[in-house]
Image 1 (tube, one colour):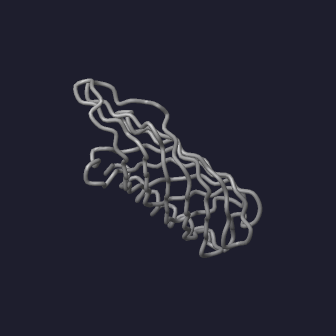
Image 2 (cartoon, rainbow, N blue to C red):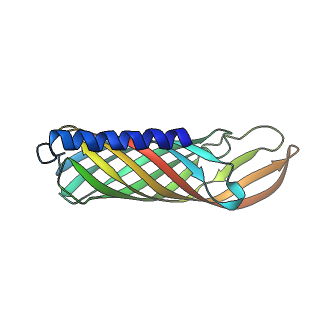
Image 3 (spheres, rainbow, N blue to C red):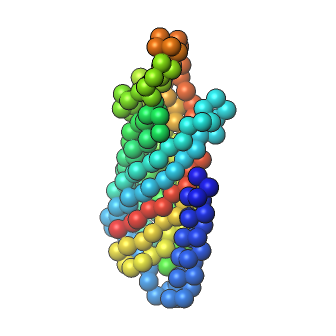
Length: 194
């Protein structure tokens, strides 16, 4: 996680230097019409009982910029944890806002949806399995750098909430409890807009 934060910080500083060297006002990302985005993020659960869980997230969004400042879309993510027990597939609607009309602009993204379990288990005698999904919420704050009129790169940090309706916990191969689980996740990521 520390290596990822260092890599994203270096990427952020290099994109700022690149944007200043070329001149911010000369290249703008398209601000109207259809957009699509792919992301790679790393997340760490900060909830007290689940702080040993971390996620790799792969996501894709498709939407429409209605005006220069905002757009809306739909998307899906694949959240994978190393043990497999909390692997899930969230679907969401997204609202994006941009604050400047330059090559380098801050942005926010708000996502609200529902997450579906994939039926994977962490395995072993103390397995964890998601039986029923639940509410999904995420907010990201970051910087977008336009590489051309059609392509841009995002670097962001954010918060994610996963409210899972039913999770099975096993001990020594026997189901011991079925609980709802609320996870708070801090994440960082990078994305490509086109």
